Amino acid sequence: MNDHRAGLTNYVLRLTETLVQQGANKAVISPGSRSTPLAYAFSKSEDMQTFIQTDERSAAFYALGLVKATGRPVVLLCTSGTAASNYHPAVTESYYARLPLIVITADRPHELREVGAPQAIDQIRMFGEHVKESVDFPVPENRAEILNYMEQRAVRLLAVAKTAPQGPVHLNVPFREPLLIDLEGQAPVSRFQQQFIGEASLSNDMKDFLQQAITKSKRGILIIGEQPPELQKEQFWQFAKSLQWPVLCDPLSNLRSQVPADCIDLCIDQYDALLKSETFSEGVQPDCVIRFGPQPVSKPLTLFLKRVCPKTYIVVDESPNYRDPLGLTTHHLQTTARSVWQEMDVCLERTDYTNQWLQANQISTDVLNDEMYFNGDEGHIVRQFIAHLPNKADVVCSSSMPIRDLDTYFKKTEKDISLFCNRGTNGIDGVVSTALGIQEGRKRTTYLLIGDLAFLHDLNGLIISRLQETDLTIIIVNNNGGGIFSYLPQASVEDYYEQLFGTPTNLTFNHIAAMYEAQYDAVSTVEAFENVMQATKTSSLRMIEVFTNRADNVEAHRTVWREIAKRVECIEG
Image (cartoon, rainbow, N blue to C red):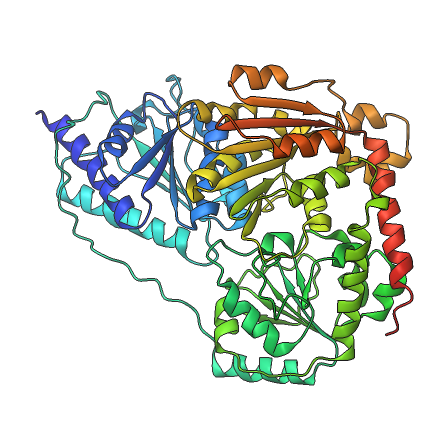
């Protein structure tokens, strides 16, 4: 074997071994020529699981879904040129969602850069500030110092990706031709063996401060934003039970499911509807807020907090770059949520303030359980969709209306159901691919609730269903355009509304289902939807297209909100 091939083989095999050793043992590969050496090395490794997705944009969101599902770093590999540019939307999402995505872009060697060579663009730091760190690796050589440098640099990059705040890192790896490696070659022995990353814990000062803040508060609330899949729910609810404060659970906190019986009343799942009432909002102003995770989805909650501006607003965030889009934080605890739940020892009695929240939450729940307020709108569809979810199921949803409908209609339950959504940047691209990645990572029955425009954004994500097994049911709410805009001020100006915001495409997806050999049903009534949901799933990929009306949907939602507001006005504070 010549020196070039030996050097190339040793380089990519050792890099592969390093990635696996550091916990990145899944790789999503976008086929291309310049990335051939690493594609071979990944496929050859018995410890690296590989997935192929021909569309780079979809591949990146698929990898992102795997990260969300497992909580572990995932490798993303592509060839040089604009292939890497297509990774940018998912890289941006992973940065703001704090997901450890390991992006590897193959590149031309230095002598072929900026000289007009094909598929050669400036890839150095091409993802800008949307990655935590970006490194241009050396061209492979069969020299110990090069291999040692490459290994140490890769270890550091993996550590950066996994250190709070977690996020994507970029490895740009140039290769000279020829690109074939020795498939019988053995990876050189790694010098680096193991890395330990410590966990943050509460300092004595943190404990003393929290103890005082909690015991002094007369009207305290807990707000729980999106949490990782490894969340220890029992630990949290033990903490919440000791406080006896109302717990406002974002749907992505996944604390609305598997709620212990002795804590289920503390779980406030109707705050989004309740806080639309000015009377109720005025009566439940808190003096202390403790928030874990990012700011929840609910806009009424956001407006409520901005208006109230609580005297004490504590954000628990493991990063020094704590998340606070409202600018309300008075105290930041740089530690993990788990450390607070495990280490704080408090015991409070339930207050009238807590009972006020609990009573209102039950009133709102009663309205949502009353059939008279539902007439076939999207909320009615989502309500029935949730009712038919089996135990041990995962739900992925797109932003805009699907996540907001889940916020309203996904009520607390003892079932094991987990919700996922790309809320790092709140975009609607890549949702199909993310859902497929989550299903692969968790190996559970998975449903995707998505609007027609978001589905159109990522049709190529379905390609991977032709290359591997999956178990996904897609509910496409087709209201012929951007339904979320119907709730915004733009809808009050009729001129150009449909052209600029409604954007009706007049498309249906039966032909897409046929192309992918998916089980397909089209429905336009709640009764038909219920029948389809109860029917046997006969294909690994299933699509249920539900046709709705945007205008009717807005009025139906507002009718429910008005009824809830009317009923909670009579609660005495």
